[in-house]
Picture 1 (cartoon, protein in one colour):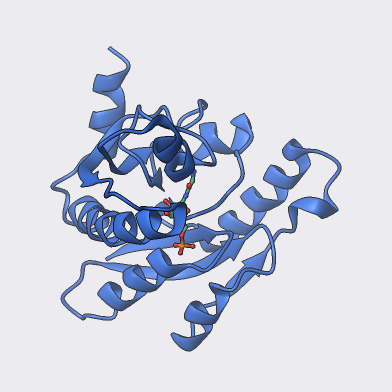
Picture 2 (cartoon, helix red, strand yellow; picture 1 turned 180 degrees about the horizontal axis):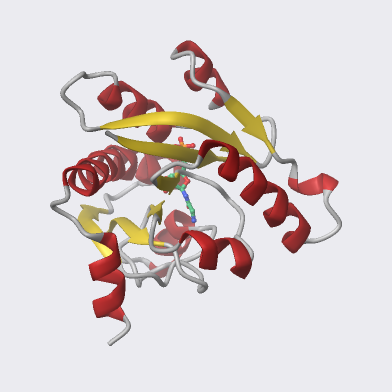
Length: 200
Ligand code: GAR
């Protein structure tokens, strides 16, 4: 059984979908802890499932590196097989990424490498594209630049605002994330091999 830590910043709707999937005894992964960089609304989903939570408030640390060191300490308590960034809206310091990559993955609401960064949905709308997408990647030391594990196109429709488009993307993200976690857990998807071949 693959053990998973999920890190969030916000509502945690993708976390919720992963928790619901993992509640199925047939699902080959279990979420063991949920962490956040702030008092995130998404903690409620973890609490509903009786899953422990931790918070490492970014604002209380003098630097990104000190914040990341505390995050690493918390993750070390749980020693998950996989870390999932599911809406964590912070760049991780290199030490933490180096310690966990390739066993750390991220969901992103755009078809990477298009529209990386904190405003993937807004940037796609501003660019006037006809379609954007959702991606799941391995986290590396760039901004949403790691090897792509799964992605799918999502249309931009006339009249879309950022919220409407994001709400159309999120179900796709959830499906991709759940599928990636399942494939990592069953061994169908070898993160180390994907990472190694991306570095060739
Ligand atoms: C998701 O769309 C996720 O991809 C995005 O934040 C949302 C979190 O929603 N993450 C990023 O944009 C990271 N660059 P949720 O809290 O409802 O799951």
